[in-house]
Image (cartoon, rainbow, N blue to C red):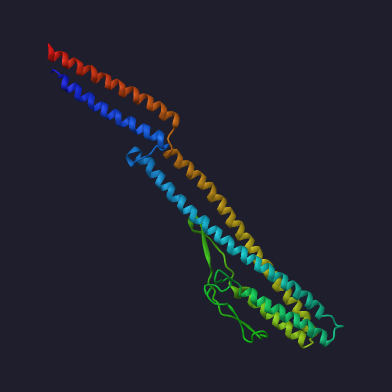
Length: 296
């Protein structure tokens, strides 16, 4: 079967068009530095890249949650430090009040200072941040502790709830509780300080001595809660480090699929340019031959 010059020319023209498109794509890859400009460039690579970017977004959200969690825990830790200092002073006062040489008036004076410490302790329990009461469970819109007699309470009532506040900080539903339910700690502290104040005012040396032990027990509980906060802070930091390592791996994966290999692209450009020039030359020769045949 005889192949016409026209058929050969058409085939060569198609090759030129294909070569021009390939050359353009290579030039575009070099200019942008991206290996994937459209889905057809690498469907598998694109799907892996999209999945990696989704994981990056999720990791970024977890890191934001960790930041919020550490802020909440740090604030609670600072407030418990203040409460611990307050109880340390209360214990010193209780030890003084248990001294058998003290007069009733001297114990009453110590009782006044305990009363002031009680007021400070209630203020700590009703601490808020950003419009949220920290120790109220889920009832964060209202103060969790209410004195029956403002300034001189016989009882401090807890009006919050037992709700816990958690933050998700990693894959697999990893979460940490960032709040302390006020009734778990403060209610005992208030009851102890109220009893100690009343015993001092009643000049009851034996009861004051027992009160010193109660204050010591509350102080131990504050230290225990602070230790728990410290453990959660470490857990959050470990989770952050793990997420940062994962972020680097995902970014490397994305770069491996998306970023063009400069050296490889330059070689590809030269090859495609050479192929295109060869095709153009072949077309020119074919067209010249066809014209000579026509003249003959």
